[in-house]
Length: 252
Image (cartoon, rainbow, N blue to C red; front, side, top):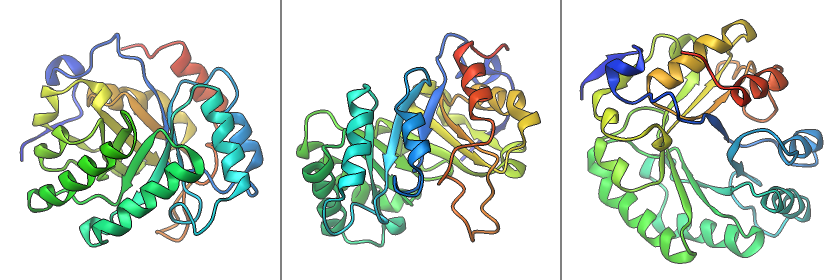
């Protein structure tokens, strides 16, 4: 697989300046632990592409009224809610994945699914293809996101609405490279999740996302503490600032 460094959009052919950047929220903590955060996401204004609902490492074992209320507020505001379905890098059984998806639909009326810890090699393409094809039979036009966290085999692009092609730290992101095959697809197909990003580098990070052709982002100053913490569970400390910058566009 060929890669290009984070060069301007005119070089890669992916970063058209009229693409509207917005947020894909990987999964805020349970509404009981983060009520203000869920309330903020439902507020009019922030350009939200979707929000992932992760009840308890998935849909949980029974309907949760707090999650139902939080998801309902977002959906009433016109924001997509996606259920998190763990693939465990292809190890988790197909039947378990589909059962999780069905529970999300039955209990929370989600608009689609994020397949977390999605494998990225060509050998697992048939397995993920089968999973996505089945998910698309469960409801009309579900929005499906594959969270690889890295550039996968290009064949995955034909399966889902969006791919998460970067998920990691700011130190890695600022030196990241983009796979050449992504230039064949519009920025609306790609997502980047970055943690540990200082406030002073917001403009740089936004430009990297645009240069690499990703219009759905989630940047936060929260850290994973070497894998001991979930950096996505709360809002970034500079939420208002980044909302303001995306709302007014990012200069090239």
